Image (cartoon, rainbow, N blue to C red; front, side, top):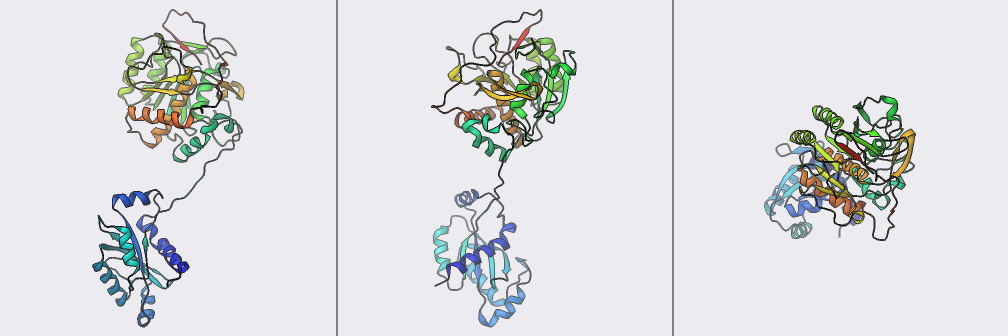
Length: 435
């Protein structure tokens, strides 16, 4: 009876010798997938006979592939006979000097019962050991030293960590068309790739802007800087396009008009910025509709806040725009559906994010929900830029429903920090930013 420990050591040695050449670096889940797909491979070891042991070990000096064999003649004959007797074909071989054996990688012919084949091989006296070629993966963990990370995502924190193992929005650019963004906030100062002021307020005014600063933090607050929070796409880069004016100091309320928004949209379109975040809504506007159409024709992604009722639901209702609505349990009775199908329902109550002056606060509203969707979209774009819009929306909705939505027994905050009930009058078409 073979010693199980010796058998395991031989298998491990053979994996180490052949694994990288044969693809052992693929994900562990591929072991099962390969079995169903009929692409199984076997590792079979051969022990040298006593009369050939010295010559065989001397021949084990180099790796061989078909046509350049390093096995002694007697072992070569054994390998050829085994290949003839079983539904397998040889791919590569290697010496295992530490065990004094010869290890061969065989591919299994399609439609072969691998379990029965292994049983037969295990009973063959010519064979030292036979086993499946298995796959392994590294396990790089993701962790953050940002002190408020634990307060951000609640029970969805494991999902965010797993998401960030795969992608963090690296290489994706996001235009935040909004108020300004505090450029000196420790969680945002390194995340800004550019900024433009379409109001003429100058740099200093952006240091006090609440709405844009909060939206930017949800999307891309810097991770592992020992400060504050972590954005959903912490390696994405933000363009601060200031097209909306904060109504009064200390208030998150702001307003824009079609002129300033058009200038900001044109800026983003001409630079091919991947995602345009519009955490705002207003009446239907012909010029903005044309700009949105132009952006979508260039494969840019637009996310926009949708209040769910009334006529001020644009640009969210324009074809091709990802409309974002706050959690449906908070929606007003009789909320209308999105006629274009690209609707995402996202959390929007008491979301922790960045505030001006290096601070942090909890924010509520579809503006913040839109920022969440923009962050998730950035992560998706890093992984797959060819995914169709409907596919992105389906994935995001599923992730939000399964992973980020609050549990049924979790209390829901009902009092937002900023209530936007007053309407702003303007000679130009007004657009509202409301949390």
